[in-house]
Amino acid sequence: MVEDLIITRTETIRLLWPDKLLEKLRENYNPPVVKERIRLKTPENNQSLLKLLSEKSKQLELPIIASGTSSVTRYTVMQRGDLLTVYCPKVKMLLERLPGSQSDRFPNLELLETEDEPVYFDARLEEWEYSLFLRDQYKNNPLSKKTGNLVSEYFSSLEGKGIIRLMESPYYRAELQYEEFMSALQEMFPLVFK
Image 1 (tube, rainbow, N blue to C red):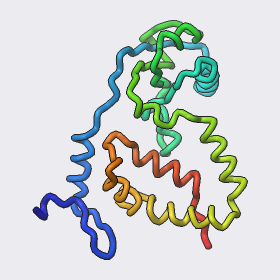
Image 2: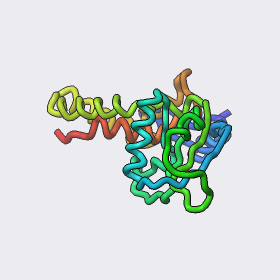
Image 3: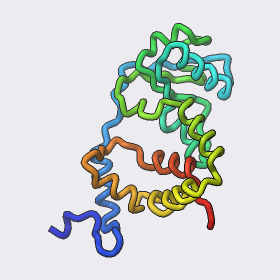
Image 4: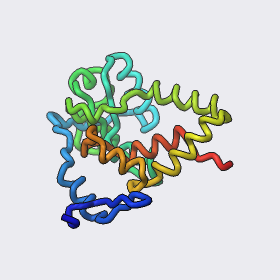
């Protein structure tokens, strides 16, 4: 019975079996089902390609989301390759409006077609930018400072009380990306020293 516990609650919540937790996360993870994969060689560089995809997303009212590998630089200090990989529920519709040609030789854009909803969970760039604007506007508000301190205390690691509570929730799903969630929270509510 004790072997079945992954965490313990005494005065604090403590992770007992990190390997077991990681194993459970691995067992329950389901990657998105990719219906089609198309590689393109476009004349655009990475920055202009991102801007172009953002514009097409708005025009077509179509979510276009960078894959985890392609968005790694947003959350960590890592280098990614020249290939930008994005998910889109209607690749053909997008493909008709992009410059370039289909090619496996030195492609710089890979389109993955999937309708799996968790992939598009946070596809609202405009809302994120507006949220950052509000963060900057209210950064001196005492509630913003208090929230930053709470985020730092409860959401600074996967072993933090906030993440553990989320994992205990009946709404918990293994496919939720907790590290990206923590990173977004920390960006939205940075730690403010008293």
